[in-house]
Amino acid sequence: MAFFALQTYAVSAANKCELYGVVKDSISMEGLPFASVQILSVADSSILKGVMTDADGKYLIEDIQADKYIIVSSYMGYQEKKAILNIQSKSQSFEILLVQTSILLAETSITAEKSLVESGLEKTTINISKNKDDNTSSSLEIKDIVKKALKLIKAHKKRIHGMPLNEETVDKIIEKIIKESNNG
Image 1 (tube, rainbow, N blue to C red):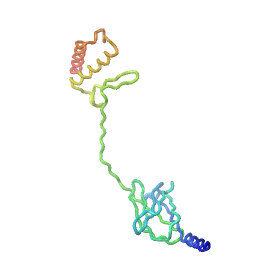
Image 2: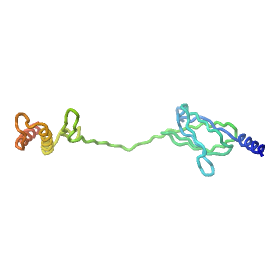
Image 3: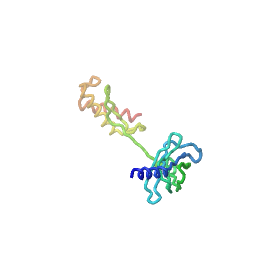
Image 4: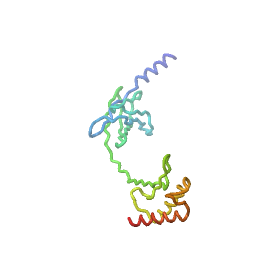
């Protein structure tokens, strides 16, 4: 019984093959590092084994039976390559050439708005413009911003330029700012 098992193992090991080769760029003929190489069953396309190429684009798939397989190789930015391969020798070589593809991405636009009030450790900044490229704001926006700014100041101090901070003073300061911004 032990002899039969040993003999079966020896026959099975004798039928094992290996597939090796290089995955290369079809134009430059340079090896493609870390490309994917898989062998699939011809019957149902299930993945039987798979490896990644080394830094030079070389691969080795060991312990496969002599048979017909689908070999698939892929690499980012290249068209996937499929081929049917009949492995019959104990050690068989197969070079894979991949063709570059162009991927056109849709245009993406990113727009950011500054916060009205940005608080830091040493200062609080009030941004007048909504857009960093836009240096204009309406009188109403300026008025709202100044009111918020003066409320912040009022929270920390009771007077600004020697004037008490009250509704009348705030309105005078706002009118002055609006007048100056309209004059240029």
